Length: 279
Length: 147
Image (cartoon, rainbow over the protein chains, first blue to last red):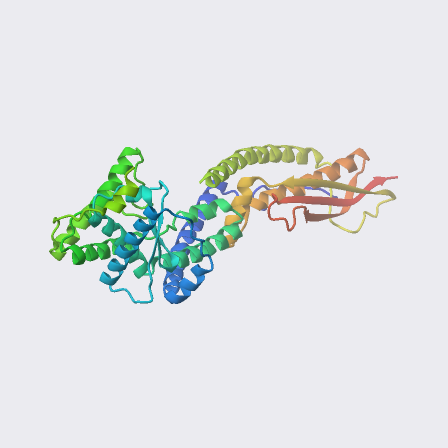
């Protein structure tokens, strides 16, 4: 009268292998994440580029760092670097309201970078590696070109938009790991930005000295440093700076195209500079 | 980067242990269902009219947690929509296990039939995003003993 039949096994549950569905979904999610990061990042960078430079300066002034006590030697280097920066700025025909402020830091860090508000930070560690004023000009002109083309604010806009995209997607999946995978696609400056700055810096070098000799010393120095530290270069895809060898090759290609002289008389660095950097 | 590695390890652990546990559970469910078939449980609200019966409330309750792999897969599914197959087997197991436990109670009472059987489900982890999803399934009905 009453009975319970055996429950059939394929009605309420799916017989498909769980890994199949999982891999399709995971690939889909990663594609979505990367696309959203790139598209939103691009839009964010484009919009940020529309922010007037005066606003950028106002924002950075809120975070003004108090000047530290520095020796007179350091002050002299600072003045020298600032004067060089001013000369480069004029050569690059930057709008007058774009004021470049050079900050010389006595740390050992092998780094130099341009940041929001036209601030260019140079570390003694990297300055010590400069073989001539020409190489230094190449470095400084490269960083100043970043400011000229609004790269710091553009990359900030890109980063913010991209991280919003990432957190929206990884939040809905409830996974921070997916967010980290998305972060791999956002780098500080794009390779296009670096190349644009390289070309601008070469242009500056040629205008000031009449040749671009010493300019590629900078990249060769980077290559040497990497060899010494036994630090393999990250694959070009992941690294924001183009590979050193690519940069050296690119440097020569551009020079040939523009008929710039690759060699010429190098200007030595001033004595005050050497006194502080070569202990 | 470490976050990615940790998640991958958790997903694979969840996959292997979760799948193993599910297979074992299904095996046990199917086997017990076959032996319990002698005691029918039906949804009808009308009791049999062929005599007098002692009526007792019987219930079976089960709580099952999801594994990391299934939770992650369901999260991915959240992006695109569609059938969340990774949760289907979890709920299927929950319902069948709850019914079996209810039948076990009725069997211990030497009942001949359980009628008016109903299910209730609840999410224990409800609203807490940091917790693995956990479900409770309750099956209850009226067991009949012929007097």
